[in-house]
Image (cartoon, rainbow, N blue to C red):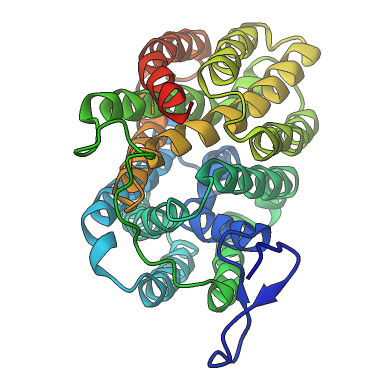
Length: 398
């Protein structure tokens, strides 16, 4: 069957139609699958600020809740590395989505910080396995970079909706509004699963890794480290971006609308990945975008100027969605069994967790300048370790 993204097709034995495995509809459905276990990251500022404003948690407690959520996801992603080749992924995904909805429902009724931290760690572990499964399945598609582009489009698009509308609901409805939004997303994703193909594991191919005899582990480690550093730097800032704006004297309406609009504009970055794929390689376009991320992060030092706060959030949003799509695609490109893609998910989650964790330790009441400086240092290190694996994969592609 031709790869017609506008149609759904399936064998006669199926009651429901199946999205063409490498078509655009399937890429969107896979994007929802890989987003569901980690959607709270896309509304992390609302979650952290909601715990502070809605439950009276301190900056440190709220940051540790967010960090525990993503550290659990990292553990789950690592677990997925070892099980993905041995499981029927669809039934597992159904069970994991049910687990997410259950723990989100439980979280609505929690008011103690320590219990919330433990519960969100469990939630993160369940979600991390789901994301690892999603990443592994994505790596079994052709042009995985494109699918990761769709993934970031979904994340930033719906994340923008959450950041625009959820923070104003917290004073009236508390954290219930946040957790109900997460439950709704899981439910929608569950309804999409029947339309996906089976995506069995593929055999190793020398066109997808740099050694004919196996994965180039040194280059893979560098790609994983670049992913970790990039995610840690960005999420460390992002978790406290609302508090940073408040400290700079900006109004909540301006902050909320800025973050929501920035997330929507950031879709331009992931759309760029969908359009470009690896046509121009990775080294030059991604390297330039990483340098722009450094510049945008530094601009946050001048957040007292509304235009600078807006510019930094919009600019970094675009480059974030652009760069991470390629970094995850790089990790997936080292093999097509799904294991290196799941490792990329693990590195990403460790970064997303470690950023807020370090930030919670250093930010105190309002030490945002130090937070920005640390993020810039991590981003610079990320550029350095990115160069070698990107150049090697570009050479292999050519």
